[in-house]
Image 1 (cartoon, rainbow, N blue to C red):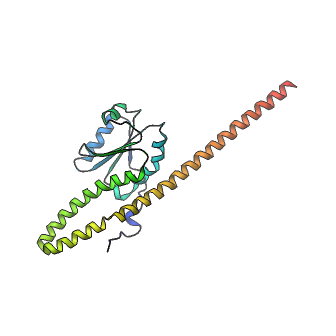
Image 2: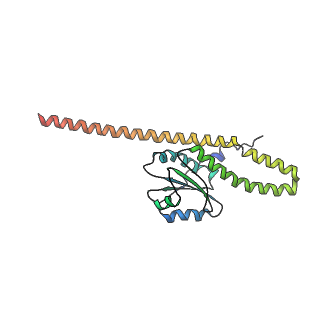
Image 3: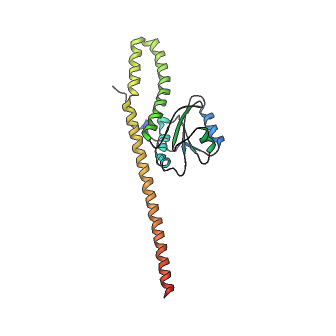
Length: 215
């Protein structure tokens, strides 16, 4: 039977975003020093003119707030502000996501594909967690349970990390990101409507002024 996380606690979003916006090369290097040899670092390369980059912002915000990924360092780099970093990392498309550990690039992807981004994070994050847990289980199993007991515990760990759990998490993150994106779109439309109303009023005032002066 699959192990289910208790509803609520583990999946509650943190109250603040953990995405670090790098403005200098020194800030960028500092992130990797802080991460050390074992922590994962996800670098997002964006640009202000890139609509695909903007569409991924709600997803990144949701991922960064998730307790599931609290040990991952999230970094955002504007390639126009830091072109040397983008060139060094061989960024050719936007947005681009590169995942690092100990300064070594593990994997990368480009494009506005939130499900693929979650899968990439989940793959390497589970490997990290599974490695530590499995070592502990192996140690305890050898001492206390013998080979048969060890196999049973390993089966439960693999079941807990099954694809179904990954799909559920992706669905939850996508749903939350969609809500955030819809709010942003609605606000942009309201602002556009207000701006259009101001322009219409200005044109009407000009017409009225011109009609008045011609009399």
